[in-house]
Length: 370
Ligand SMILES: *Cc1c(COP(=O)(O)O)cnc(C)c1O
Image (cartoon, rainbow, N blue to C red; front, side, top):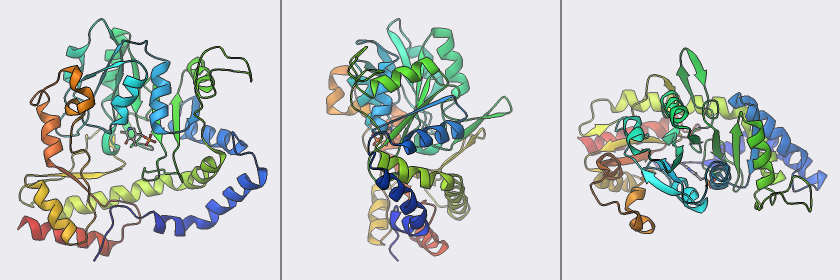
């Protein structure tokens, strides 16, 4: 049986009519830039995250870049993780900053809070934690640290829309404790559009106003420019698709958790495999269901041969990327990020995965692990 890593066609078939109605309204309006549905989506996402403001933009990468532009000056140091999608560190550089990497915690793959404080210098202005694979980093520790040192926290929540974390008995979402949190609507994300798209959420209304200017060439009014911004808006068409999908997000995330729980039960005891570990404070959204395997490359080959989709996120940590050679990091500098890059493989966990398909994945892995 062939099982893809992700199947967007089945999702579309289930909600085709809801999407098409929204899309036709957007098309009938012929307002392709900043049509009404963009503002409606912003309100809905702000509501979901229980924050005051949401600012739509053209991609998750731009959401990071624009956020960083409100938080740092050229030459400032920004602490982040080397085990993430490239955009996290790329946006730091494009905002004029210098990435300073620290290692990850092996259990959650998220930035190691114990190492963040030691990396702070008098040039540090911001920290960019990544809520990797769909579970939040320890925001309570980061927020306290940032407050003590006067730093901004830009949460890269591209993989964690709908995720939450229990802090002092209260559920907190991305954006509630950070300076801003950023989302991506890349088609494969938990809430995916029909092209690129992104969103920034924040409780800081002055910052949101500035972000709205920056996404439209730096002007609050047309033909008047307080600063130099860029063109980074979310298309009306994308907002129409996303607004139709948003009411399904909670159920989709719950279905991902159910798939993960099934894998957890079925793969328990497989030799040389480690299933993902959820911090007890977190509700995971399983953007990826990522296991560790001693013989990872052989497992990937075996799964491919059995028609099971899988992928390695991420095979090379960012401190070892050629474009960051000038930062001076060597192999061995971040052993946990480097080990994760050798051991991880992500399995199909998408909400529409059928029990039969799930069992085919389990069987293929068990066959390999014997
Ligand atoms: C997808 C992703 C991004 C970038 O989002 P785009 O919308 O593709 O620009 C940034 N960070 C992480 C962790 C991501 O997974």
